[in-house]
Length: 246
Ligand code: HXC
Image (cartoon, rainbow, N blue to C red; front, top):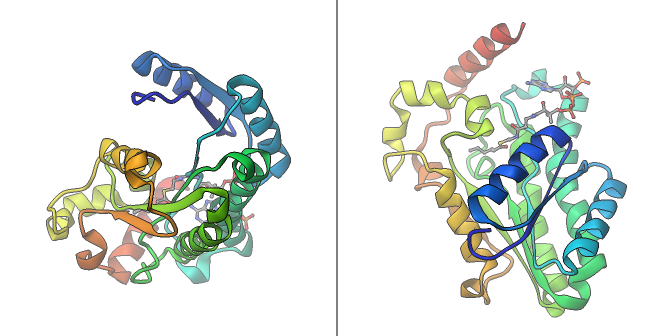
């Protein structure tokens, strides 16, 4: 928004949306439309896209970043838990992409940025649900880039690593990792921040990336290559989170 976009944000909770939209408007002076929707319910996204087009007349960029995640060993995951994360992450990405394509991008072109993750690169423990869902997103990025390239639609994945101040970090044991000195194992010796990820998205959406499609930009300080993947330590974090939630 600081670089000239008006924005539509879509999520399930109207109150949280309103607060976020107000913050964004105040910080940037741009318009922000806050619409209730659930990426698992295509009809709610169709309504949101129609409302966005009524308000702004065009859509240039779609960012798919809805995600559900928590630590859980595969054998303790319920079938519904696995399905829920796939429905939000991968099916949600497909639903939103197809709807925006059919309503606008097919005739006008556009950019789709899918937020994925590096979890599947090394088979991160306690993350089979999220890692496999994000891997599906990266695959979708390539499929849709090939199919929709002729309509001048670029499709790109952006895979963040550990980013401070996010719900993902809180849920996936970020504090424990910091206390254990694991950030020193990241090649760049620190976690990332939200502004750095925003800059990546800005680059991918901008004309500077006009010839980039069907690929994944990893923004993780190199961490997926060097960070540990300890089963027992992760199980300990999971157990303590479970106790705290009981
Ligand atoms: C095990 C869990 C669980 C948990 C939910 N479930 N939380 N199972 N451990 N901590 C199970 C439920 O028991 C249920 O299965 C099923 O998942 C659906 O849960 P519901 O609460 O009924 O569904 P819903 O309200 O739709 O929300 C579920 C959720 C939410 C979306 C998964 O809990 C959630 O994750 N919110 C967090 C959103 C978030 O933090 N997003 C950022 C992710 S960051 P049963 O069998 O009981 O019916 C990220 C980045 C990764 O992904 C990369 C980092 C490096």
